[in-house]
Image (tube, rainbow, N blue to C red; front, side):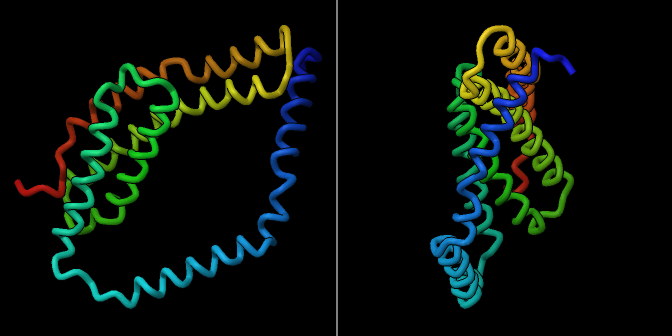
Amino acid sequence: DDKRLRPLMAAARRARLDAYKPLPALLTGTEFRATIWMGFGLIEALEAVPPQDDLAGFAAQVLARRHRRLKRAGAMIELLPPAELHALRLDAKRLRYAAELLVPLWPSHHARRYLRRLMALQEALGLANDAEVARGLVRGLRITGWTLGVAEGFALAGAAGSRDMALEAWAGWRAAKRFWQDG
């Protein structure tokens, strides 16, 4: 327990507690309850919709559209600033959720490989984003001097190589066969 880190830990603890203060009011508020009820209503409405005649065709269109969006957004991945890498991660997450839901329509090793590579990409982009978020949180603690240097150094060390990992995961994902396509 280094005495020099105590101000950092205290500042982080205060920031965490301050961030949680509005949560009880939010969870017991009318807006949250209304959102939950709207979700139930949406589920009931979706259950009332007759199933698509061509589910595989519809699913392939959804996957192709999300795949293209991710591919287009990451076309210059080597040059993307942190905020755009985060947006790319969100696109990967949207594609992953759709793929996980629809992959049973195409049970194959290609589908499993595609999902593994997509998950690796999302994870690598998440690590890169976590480092940037950590640096921002450290700056928000309003600490100075040696303690600030240690905290920022720790955040940077955690992100070491994250951009390279994201580039490698991107190449792996790009090479994966689009399992929803014929052939």
